[in-house]
Length: 399
Ligand SMILES: Cc1ncc(COP(=O)(O)O)c(C=O)c1O
Image 1 (tube, protein in one colour):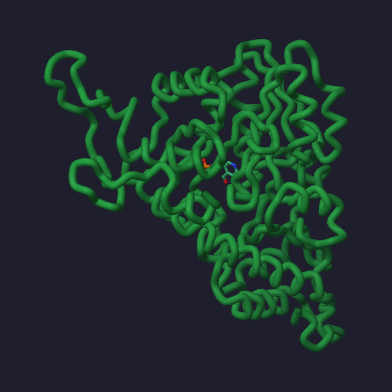
Image 2: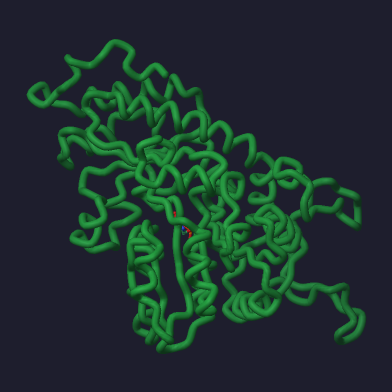
């Protein structure tokens, strides 16, 4: 099946008890047994739930994997992967990724004796320098949050494999519509399903997809033992979100391109970070491993001050100032004080994440309205002294 068909049908059967086409929300904590051990495959809802099973099967099929595991959040899914490790093990992680992942690695797991090396993965060969006999996991996110750098998944997988190092790819930004890391050699794919998979900003959820049966058993054991499982209503919402992922992602990509090109042509904008620009340093890799470039981007103003960025973020009307991404509605965010506040300032700045950097999650509204909204907000953010607007070309943003 092609992805559009899989998104609607994969892993889903009409409900066996009624024929309901939509998987019901099995809102139950336990299941009645006829005699001890004589049950219908379900004993206790932390361990199994039919709504969750349907979602786990669906997400596995969509990521071209064999096994799917769902969690109460993206962070809970990350937590489960790291709990595969033992004290003394080492992890090589991307130096540009979601701040909460960095926070979990450094603030929670370092104290249990795990060692993390944060490495720029744009040149996969650099990873080799950090491999020791204790390296058990490589963790990457591509495109990265918020700098939109790209990691060559196949190249990293070819470095990890001979050393038996697991490769986990956080695929939240791309979604399986744009990129399927298992096909490129990754061992585990992670999603904050809170984002594009759910797609409607109404649920917090996470999942893992993988192919190896033994690894699946270990992760299932952690899922059940530690108990960070999602409720059935949340699973239902993600299942419903999946059914329109392809249609939403197409529009996110189209709108993303229009907004990125508008920003780049705006005289008051300094840098636009979007992996679909032909001159983006990682464009060739993005084109090779992705089926589109998505609606996530970051930018800075010529007036690279926090004050100007703050003015802009308070002036947008359609782009709501909020944490999160990947919903149908457009969001603007300030990574330095929001999603990446837990990363030390010097570390952030080294990676280009300056105080004035703003991140956009371009939604699926009309692109012209979105561009108009950004245009008026950029104008409001520029003081008369620093405004470059007077030189702005007529209709510079029209593609
Ligand atoms: C790339 C990425 N991975 C993981 C997470 C964590 O997911 P959650 O918020 O669902 O716990 C986020 C959250 O923003 C994210 O952006």
